[in-house]
Every structure is written in C-alpha cells, then in structure tokens.
Length: 155
Image (cartoon, rainbow, N blue to C red):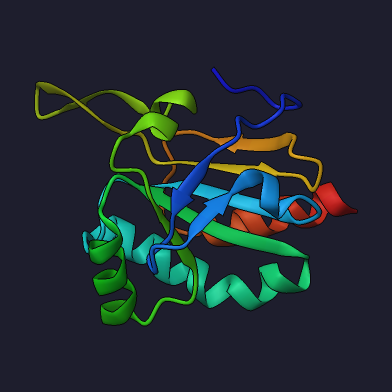
C-alpha cells in the first residue's frame, strides 16, 4: 500500500495520443495523479472537467495533472474531444499500474462485490515522492481541495 513520503512506483503508460508518458520523465514537476473508473460516466466527467478547468492554476504551480483509468487510448481521445478536456489521460488497459498502486480493489455496490478502480488521487513532488493521498474521492470540490493542498505543500 502506498504511503505518504514513500517513493512513487515508476510507470510508463500511453496517453490519449498513444505517446508513452513515464514518471521518470516528469522529474522536476509536481504531479497530480488521479485514478478514475471510466470515461464518459457522470462522476468521472465532473472530475475531469473540474481538473481541466483548474489546469491553468495547477500549471502556474509547476504541476501536471494526469488522469488514469483502464480505458483505451481511443476512448480517452473520444472523452477529451466530447468534453473539451485539457488534461492528459493515461491508459492502463493491463491494469499493472493500477494494481501496483493499490487502486484495483474489491468494491461493493448494491450488495454485489466486484473488482474495480477505487477513485483516488496522489500528489507526487518533483523528486518522485508521494506527498498527499486521497482515497475513495468524492468528486464535488475535489480539484479545489487538491489545488489547496498543493499550495500548502509548496509553501
């Protein structure tokens, strides 16, 4: 399980344009890494739109926003075009990163148990160390809360 002040596990995943994005290549930047269940669903759309709207604020804090789900790069492209998103979405169809980060978990809904992505967010500092973790994220106001935490961490 990931902990604050532990080194973030390295990853290399394709973004919506099929360009490989690796954690090691992002050193020197703050990273807001958020995990979400599925493109084009209500909660995920709200979260992605909120992060897109706040992207300039994060950029001014030397932070990049990366959303991760198990959807394909083609689904990510469709989602970005439909919702006019300005953030980068990474595709983990093999779920290897989701498992390594402990995000692929047993979930319960209406009495049924199934494996799925637990909506979570991490802030990773420029040295690759995890500085904040949110689990079972509630979408409303989440982008604002993350931005405020990032400002505190940088202060």
